[in-house]
Length: 212
Image 1 (cartoon, rainbow, N blue to C red):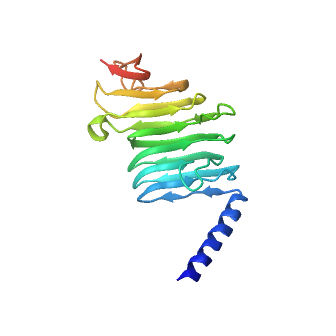
Image 2 (cartoon, helix red, strand yellow; image 1 turned 60 degrees about the horizontal axis):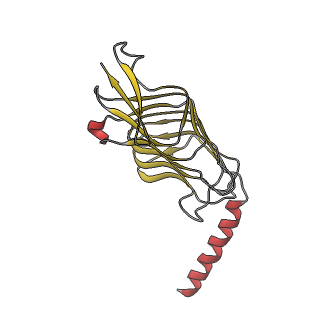
Image 3 (tube, one colour; image 1 turned 135 degrees about the vertical axis):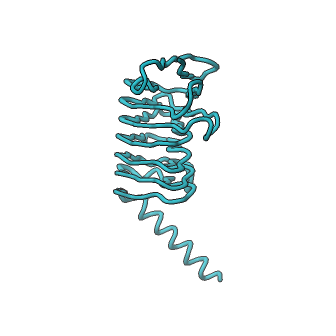
């Protein structure tokens, strides 16, 4: 048994060296029923791409960075995707060092929350950019009351996006922590003109509530 253990340790060490030196490119992948769809925990994973990711099953977290393995953050760019079904959270990102995280053109519906973002280091504030999102959150009657974003990243920016709520009048959208919104639509005004999107700031959270 001991000889198998040593062989396994040698194989894992070799695999870690190989993975840390290559660029990873995932294209047209489908995530099934799982806790985490794509996970990264190695700082040497740089210039990696996830293109056209699809998840239509039961998934707790779609993409997780910096919370497994060596607990280091690789550099990932996400381009496009279609997320539906029972995905609870899109992102769980904890950046360190100098690696950023970027998402372009992702569609998701029926999710409970966008996710958790942290990028505080002693070196500098790492940028996180989410651009061209089309997100339709599950109503509170299904997902419960959620903080749709938890952000400890002072340079988190969401641009050119739609963040909408499937739900009744009175549901609130709460964003906890730091975030800059640039050209973002939060409501159902595109569907019914008598809905008014109202933005408040309370207890360190951004709260968006639509009324009639």
